[in-house]
Structure formats: C-alpha cells, structure tokens
Length: 407
Image (cartoon, rainbow, N blue to C red; front, side, top):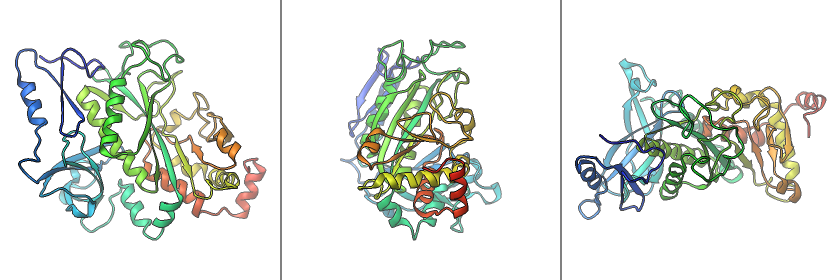
C-alpha cells in the first residue's frame, strides 16, 4: 500500500527521475514491488530518437466556467503555431456544455505551451470551444472575446498590459481542510505565515516550487510566488502580459497547478473565502496599465481610468467571480463589495495605486476586487473596455462628483 505525500514531494518514500525536459516527475515507490518504479520509466521515455510524432494535450474550460478539462491526441510532427494544429471535438453533454442529443463541441487551438510533464516536443494547447455551427459556447468567454475583438485587437495588444496575482488554497484531500491545519481544528492566528519559512508556518512550499518551475518550462510568463497570509494559501504572479495573452497564460498555469496537486494528493481550491471567520480570502488582484499611463503625465490618465471604474463598479463586481461577496467585506485587506474606493498604497481599497506610481507620476493601477476564481479573459477585457473604450455621460460624471468618487 502506498502512502500519501504529506505535503512533501521529496520524502523517503519518493523516487524522482529527471524527464527529457528537465522537469522532475514524481511518483510514489511501492512498499512491496517495483511496479511504480517501472511505470516511472515509461512515463519518462524519450520518444525523440524513435518517432517525430508528439503528444498534444488539448485543454479547455468546462461547464462551470472554472474547471479545466483536457484530453490527448497524437500529432504527426512538432508544431510551433496553433494554426498548424487540427480542430478537435469532445462530448459536451459530459461537461455540462451541450445536450445529449447534440453533444459535439468543437475545440479551436489558440495557444501552445511546452508540456513539463511529458517533456520533449510534446505540448499543451489552450483551446476555445464552439458549437458545430461556429458559435462560441456559453461558458467560453475567451472565444467570445477573440471574436468581438476582431476589430479591436491592435488596441488591446499595444495598449493593455496586465499583471495578475493568482491566490489559491491547498486542502487535505480526504477532509477538505487547509494543508497544515489540524483536522477539525485551527492553527494560531494570522500573522506569522505570510512569506514565512518553517515547518510550523509554511505548508505546501514543494507544490508552489514545482508549479513555479513547471510554468517557466512551459513558457508561461510567471514572475514570482509567495506564501500568503492564511496558512495553506499561496500566490503566484503572471505578467506583464499584453491583451488576451494574459488569460491564456493564467488558464494554462491553473491547469499545471491542478496536475501538480493531483500528483501530490492535495486538493486545489480557488474559492474566494475557503474558511469563514478571521481568515484572509483568496483574490486575483489585477495590475493594469495602458501605454499612456506609463508615459509622462500618466497619473492623470490613471485617475481618469479610476473615475470610469467607479462609475461601472457594479458591472465589474458582477463579473469578478462567484462567491466574491463572502470575501469583499471591508476586512482582511479588502474593500466592501458595495462601495467603490481608491487610494495610494492602501490595500483596503477597491483600486490601489502604488507609491512609486504616485511619485513618478506614471505607472499602473491595481484592481483588488477580482476573486481567485475569476475568469481572466473577462476581467482583462472589462478593464480595457471601461478605461479605453467606454466614455461616461455628463450626468454620470456629475453624479460621481456629488458622491465624491471623482478623483
């Protein structure tokens, strides 16, 4: 009988073998045979000397709008661009995305990443999902966004830059309680866990590090990682990324995290408030700037963008993730969900502006409202639309002035 990983990928019961792609694949050694060891050997086979064929893992977003699904197919040769890949299909009735009597959903390859699990020339493929008639299915925000941005793509590509801070929580598999917490009990109060080291303060570092390296190998623009305020909670940052690329990179990074926690026997949750009470929730803070914000005089552009964001606060909140009302309470470094606010270096505001941005008179803003389970395609496109394309009416500006929201 094999034993669980118990939050450590490198324990005495674990054997690691380096794959052709130099990313370690881990497996548990059987106590009474070499079965798992032989399986490891097959998993890490280098196919390149024997065939030009590669394995492409087609990845898409499932019917809940937050679950990731995937399946594999053989491609005759290595590819460099999604346009070289064939469209494919899946049974949408099994993912809550199509009726049983007309269940075929078509996958359109959109972005390619290197596969850190299989190594070699094998790839991960982020796909959009369409009906056979060519319409984006309801849950595929990326497909609708790519279609609607056909005439706006250059605007998004050259003006919108995003840096997304993805927070997540690790749970013990059988009890669905945070990693490192006593089963049915609580650790000491928050304070010593943020960016901490030590067996009594840091839980899941091996998973965070494995994910970090997997993202770098895959070609995801991951820029950092850290332990979060609530024990068992972590964060990584992706960006800066331009336009719709930000969404592709976040979704692929989430897929990698699901696969790594699967191997570790740990459950990943993107719930924005996994534990009620005096514990921080999990967000997906989105840092954003346009070209004009980054140039001289950019602070005035930022303030105009904040005005627009204040006027569309409800529209943004409704699209910023499920269960976000449990997180945005005005406590634990959040603003109240019903009130828009902004401030310099204030983590209790809806929008935070950094000290350096204020000092230099240019830079970026941080939208702290998105929940950890938000759809990055929706959030990034809404930020760009509100701050670049949308113009408030005079009446709306007057109302904002009256409510002291104008900056």
